[in-house]
Amino acid sequence: MPAIPVHHMEGHLLAPMLEDNPPDFPFVALLVSGGHTQLISVTGIGQYELLGESIDDAAGEAFDKTAKLLGLDYPGGPMLSKMASQGTAGRFVFPRPMTDRPGLDFSFSGLKTFAANTIRSNGDDEQTRADIARAGKHRF
Image (cartoon, rainbow, N blue to C red; front, side, top):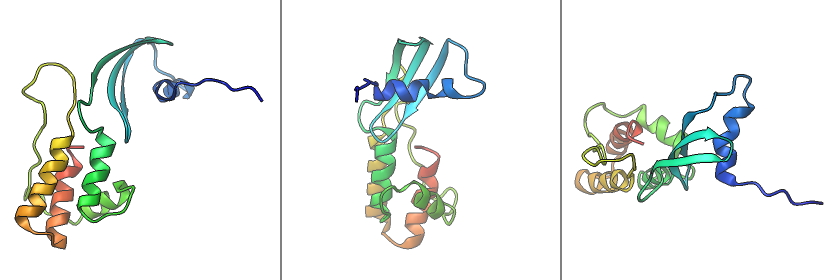
């Protein structure tokens, strides 16, 4: 059986080309996963320019680690959303990372750290965890 080489991230990047109405070149793509967070300019197949990327944790990695801090199993996404629906709006406000820096890079490790510090200073009760989940839901 022949082996066909496939670039994992390029596969994700070009998946929209399989849709009934694929995007026209050029377009900008945001690749978000547990291992990668990248903003890429796509001018054609095989023609990519990295515009920005995570300088630390990928968005999905930070999201899953925050869910673990809140006592949720992996993968944390669906459970974190459910927990967030029980949270109080406005009790905690996650920071907006890297808004004061030039460029298009991302940083998500600070969000995870904020969640850990908030748990440490406010307790680990069910309502506090739900309030943190609600605050973090819109930052990841």
